[in-house]
Length: 390
Image (cartoon, rainbow, N blue to C red; front, side):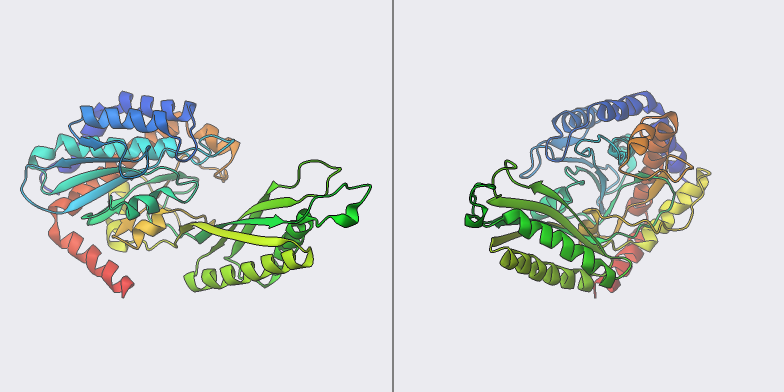
């Protein structure tokens, strides 16, 4: 750009460095699981109000969701959404670094607000709860909070840097078996062991894995295995997650899993109940927007590596099917430290993580400004999105 906006946006982020780092460390030190992010969402909402945004908190049907809006003084134009996450992993804290995501999103929003008098169109900040539950963004989509948005973007900390991300389609399944309780010593023959059904399902899943494609994942935990060792379990429950890069394969996996669960219940003479929830789709990365973000990374002297083959899932995939979307990954370590680990949690509050949050904020703001001020860029992103849709 020739109007100096890149430099002004970068300066606006740096001018707020102390406040942004304090926000990151506050969220990191007070981890809150999905749909319970009261402190994080309140802190973010307060900062955005002070920054000149019209803030809805709560937004829609979710108490910890945020929608903040600011309209530019540069005339009518498009609407760009900057997304943020701030939920923590249950029992682990910010092992996925969502404190960095929140900080980058807030920093980008405030930097753009500083240029609002000359900004065409509208900026929306969307605080999206419960990403770790693969739920919050779909709720916000259903609530209409993405209505009118022309493009969406956010960043995520990682152990590698790349503008493009590949995600697995994902769905959670709760399986509940109901049998009949009995004394485990005096008359076990009177019972129908619901835990047997759940164990059979785990064995079936283990055998199924040898026929699954390499990109497919099935994993689960026992959430109810009975009440006492001397009672035949009348109830047993498990929580499973099914994943695949292919939407068609993913749907076939759900059919197969249901058949296995029901077969296990029949074998153990237990009633079977299944509840499918938290549906996240594969990612439709917008290459036009991703290339522009990558150019700003290069300007910040941040090099990209290859797209990671370590695949996860996120409800940002659902957003990417609604509007052109990017979800770049930025490294906070040079080592292959796994996400969702204690080590990655500790890295998310280091000086490097703080610096990455500011870089992410700057590149998000610069990319959003490009989209707002260059109609041809958004037109190309929209054309790519519509071609993929059709």
